[in-house]
Length: 83
Image (tube, rainbow, N blue to C red; front, top):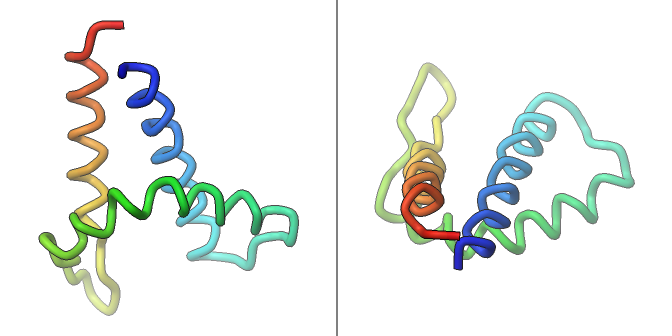
């Protein structure tokens, strides 16, 4: 179980980095398959949290705090599941 949580943790890190890349620039073509794989793994967990926790409006943009909740839950799981 710890292994699965740990792998998901790294997928969340990748999703976070890729979200910043796609927010500020057009990613290179070779990165699109990576983005699709990362989204396919993380989105089924993130979508229910996005329904529960609306984005926080900061100026003209919204901050997705649901990602932070999922990340915190995964960190707690990593720390408490024996490996």
